[in-house]
Each structure stands twice: as structure tokens, then as C-alpha cells.
Length: 347
Length: 291
Image 1 (tube, rainbow over the protein chains, first blue to last red):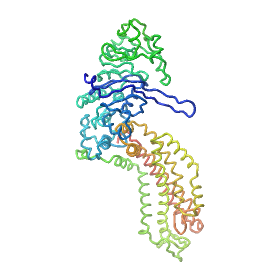
Image 2 (cartoon, chains in turn blue, yellow; image 1 turned 180 degrees about the vertical axis):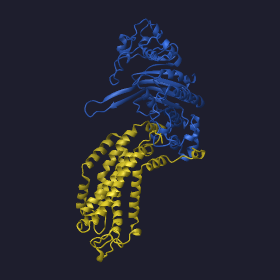
Image 3 (tube, rainbow over the protein chains, first blue to last red; image 1 turned 90 degrees about the vertical axis):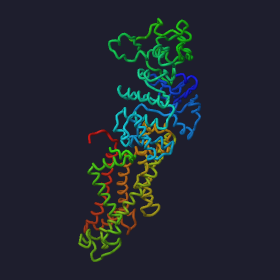
Image 4 (cartoon, helix red, strand yellow; image 1 turned 135 degrees about the vertical axis):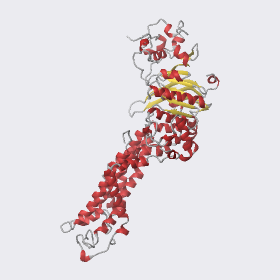
């Protein structure tokens, strides 16, 4: 996507999100869920955001839409700063950015018909009554591949994939520029995943939508994303074109994540080296000094325990935060798996 | 579904609720009984064979006769007529107490559950304090202070009952608040009041309605207890509890005077309770099942 370089739709700089856990006695425990994140999303571009559970992916998506409080940093949508908006101004701008949630079983109000749920954006932003908005509700249902005749049905009458289509219809109602898909297909079975992903792709092409596609399933992300951002413990560790990140990961964590993608052909599964990470994600309330990945990294060096690696350019596009790319001089720019190092592979 | 049907949005919820409530025989019968009791009480001026205070001295303390279907009391007043009028007072008293409880408990419960934080804490402690008052004893104290009269007592009862609704609504709101569809509404940009009214309230309605119908039963009994003790309605105004109290003096000669208001109270209370059960079943989250 060439447009993304010149005029990004979304521009995130130095985003921090901190959750404070107040206690009656003792000090407040605070968790920095998102830590100094920078990224852009171009118009019509899909940015895949991957990482394990608890890495801050969903929080990043929610912070973009101001669904969780932003501690500091800047989020711009089409040049407009979102973090400073208050009350009514923010509500007005919400029409331009929508979200599709992970769980299609709880993202639709069970007490009302799906038609009424899709009416909500029209009611709130255009002041239309249910009767006035109805023709557009029916159009939207057809757009996402559901019969208009289902508008008066309740969510419980639909399957997970159908509900996700309804949630997409609701998100599309006001022609947003950005849709954050938070694990939007994770709860669906594989064949339904494909249908929903294809639908998202068609809609992106038709309406020039941009997606922030949050997922832990790397195979899905590869299919849909133009660029991929990898998160670990609240930080972005690698960003780059999907092709490059998948073929030549620059960060050891990305490499480990990729090695965990199941190989469809069981006979070929043995051919690949599986990197097994030991240990757990460090306590986000008490992150280690230096690189957050040091305690699980097969390449950890002394410097990794001392300072957080800066973001550096990678040869084939994108950026990475790893000392291997900066201070490990002989390794700089080299593909990780070529390095003759003892990788903590499965024992 | 025909093409005609989809041309218009359907009022959500109501039809589904009616369909499910109808299949519950017991609750349906209870609703019909309650409706009859209410209609008969409200149309007492039209239906009652005698006026409220009409005295038929020669026929006092009579059993059922063709003139007085349910007999007369010690002053010769027609029991059937007095029961009808008494129903108005008793139902209105119960309704008043519950209405006060709803007005206080429901909005505050929604607010506390939705906003949380300090407000929730303050309201919760306030509710705790109110909960420590025994309802009927407090009502008695109010009557002792203001003199006999049902209105003040029922307002007091409503205030003391309100924490029950507050708690039910607050806890249901807390769980609905976590649902993704509320976050979806926030991300659409729906104002908080609209979210509370359109997303939260319909989804906390089922425990609320159940509580309300049980509370109506409790308020009816509380009114009966107060009036029985002579603390509620001031004679000669009748209420079911009042009739019961007056009937006590004649229990040896005409037990019917105790039986009839007692049965009225029992039937109405039972109806409220059975309707509560039916509502709980009909409003519960719909699950997939073969119809």
C-alpha cells in the first residue's frame, strides 16, 4: 500500500495505556498495558496486530476507539487528534470508527431484534426513527449476505458466523473509515472464518475501509493483512509488510510465534524447527528492565538486560526493536535462523 | 416470514414475551384472577349491590342470603359490597408502596451499577442503612408519629422496600454492563442515558419484574397487618386487613367475616407470587429449543 506512507488514516504516536488497581490499603498497583506504541494505518490498508494473550493487542484497539482511557500519546484519525476530544465531540466522531468484537454471542443485545440493533447507529447519529432507518437496515443485511427477511429475528436465532455478519453490518452502517476487528473471527469455526474474512475483504475493497485486525491466529492474519505488527508485553516489537515478517522475521519473538503456526500437512510438520518458549509472560505490573522478551529469548545478550532496544529499520521494510539488529554487529541485518546460536528449541 | 412482515420493524420483545407467558398455565390463571379482582374492585361503585355505608339493621350478622350474598357485618352492612370497596384501598395501598420503591430503587440502581465508583459505594451504603429497618415496624413508628392513616405508612413502606429493588437492579446492571453489546453501543457513540434505557433496562427487566410482583404481595400483606392492628385505614373506610380486624370480634358467631377478607388477601397474594414465577420463566434468556 503506497498511500500509507504519505497520508496515513490512523497515526498513533507514543500511545500509553495504564490500568490502575486501587486498593483500600497499600500502594496502587498499576499495569502499563500499552507501552509507547507507534504505528500508522493507511487508507484501505489492513494492519494485522498479533501477540499472545495479555500482550495488549485488544487494549491497543480499544484505546484507538477511546473505549479505554488513554494515559498519554497521540492518536490521529484522518489528521484529527482523538485523545483530546470530550463528550459530544467524541461521540460524533465515533461514526468514523467502529469495532467488530470477538464474541458474536454477546455483541448483540439478546433482548431486541437484530434489525433494531442495526438501527442504533442511525438513531444516534442521524436521528432516524426505526421506521425511517428500516430500508437501510435491510440493505445492510443484504450487503453482508443475510436475507433481509431476518431483520425481525432475535440474535439467538442465528449462528455465530451469521451474528458476526450482523455485527459487521452494524459497524458498516455509518460508512466508517476505520474498523477495529478484535479477534473478529477467532470464535468461529474454520469454514465460517473464511467466509467472514472474504466478506471483510470485499467490504474493504468496496468502501476503502481500513482495518486494524487483531488476532492471535497468525495464519488468518497472513491471509488478510497488508502489514503486520507484533506485540509483546505491551510493546510493539516488530512492524513490517506481511510478506517480509512472515518470510524473514527480524525479532526472535516473531520467529517463535511463526514457528507455532500449525503445518497443515502432518508429514511435513516434522521438517520444521519448532521454537518452544519457556517461562511465562512477565508480570506486566513489574516488567523486567531492558528488553521485555529477555527471559524467554534464545539469543539474550547482556545488553538485553540493561536497556530496551530502540526501533530500527529492517532491510526489507518495517522496523524491529531488538539488540540483535543494533549492537549484535555480526548479526545485524542477518536472518535469524541463519545465526549459529543455540535456540531454546523443544527438549 | 412473509415479505409484508419485513417491511416494518417489529416492536421487540413484547410478542415473544406474550407467547412464552401464555404457555405457562398457572401464571396465566393467576393473571386472570388478579385481573378479575382488580376490575371488580375498581368498578365497585357500579357493581356493588349496596353502598359502602348502607346499614340493614334487621339483617345484621346474617349469613349468605338472597339479599346479601355474602352476609352482613355487626352493623348490617353488606359484606360483598364492602369487600369490593376494600379491594380498592388494599390494592392502591400496595401499589403506592411498590411505586415509591420503584421510583427510588430502579433509577438509582441503574445509575450505581452503570457508573460504579464512589457513587455506587455511597448509594450502596445508603441502601444498607435502609435495609436495617424492619419494614412493618418502621411503618408503625411513622404512624405513631403522624397518626393513623395508610398513605404515610405506605410511603414509608415503599422507602424501606426500595433497597431491595435497588440491589436487584444494581447487580443485574453490573453484569449487563460487562456485556459486549454495551461496549458496542458505547463505540457507536450512543449517549449514556440512551444506553441505560435501551440496552441495560430491557436486560435487567426480568429479575426486576419478578421482584416487583413479589413485593406487591408483601406490601399487600403489610397493609393487611397494619390495618388488622388498627394502624392502617381509619374506619369506616374498609380495607381487606381492616375488615379482617373488625371481623375478629364476631369470629365465634359469624366466622365468614374473617374468612372472606382472608381469602381475598390470600388469593391476591398468591396471584402476585405465581405471576412472579411466570414472569421469571417468560423473561428468562431465550434458549434454543424445539418448539
